[in-house]
Length: 64
Image 1 (tube, rainbow, N blue to C red):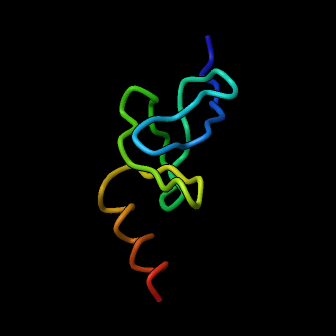
Image 2: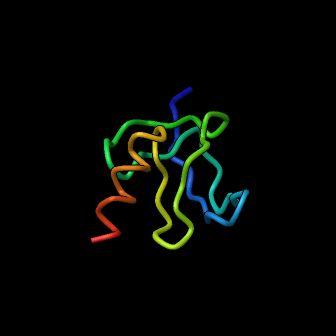
């Protein structure tokens, strides 16, 4: 069985699953993030991040 990319709506402290899947892609690195491992996202930009490192990179670019 192949993996399928999920479609999510990111909310504060949780996300809604619009289309079932196994993973989402990190907006910075392009790495696959299993839904059970997804901890970092930006509600305003509707982006997921692989780790705090990528989330911080996006935060720095948004402050400029």
